[in-house]
Image (cartoon, rainbow, N blue to C red; front, side):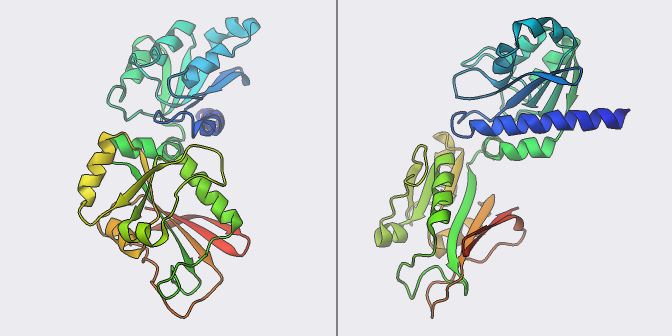
Length: 310
């Protein structure tokens, strides 16, 4: 029976994660959160955090309950991918709303690492007599908000290293810029830019290529443009980005820039595009660091995208 309940809880938590992902652009710098309200095996309402400063996932889920279903809330379970907030920010505490609505059970994906929450929402719900289950699909819920978690736990942005290389491992052709990406992978690159806060290149790349680093083949905001100079140590840069609220950073520089991040241990993901072309020589692509584990591989025409994480 206990295992059956676990399967049910995971099913609805997976739906929370699907809903939450819709907020990848609008929710920033807040985390992406999804909520599902269930009564006797039937979803009566759903919601997600659409936009920073507006209603959280729980608020939107309760607002979407049909008037005829309001009486069912006393028998309901609300599933939420991240711990309900317990403090007053731009919106009132979601934990208070859940208590007020009278649901009997709350299932939470993961604890919120934000200093103003960190278990206080869970405590408030338990103190009010609600049944609270924590840690359902916890790793998946944390992965969804890996930028938010890294920012608050490590006081630096989530860092994605990204480069394109030839089949024989070069990122240019004898020192000259080389078109490696195709139309489809360019679109993916610009989608990534729209989803992250900032993008960085090294001083040499900036002078040699004058990259725009904008979103041209996707819809969304341009990331903040950063050029790394020799006079700016990486620890200082990380502190500056943290102080300015930059939660995620794409690094698209040359070999030297990438290796400086790798040597400093400042990376969370690495995305490598490989094209089926070869050159006689040039700048060798950076070496993948020890501990890089491939978690996804996508074929884009003749090119291949490999995604690595720690």
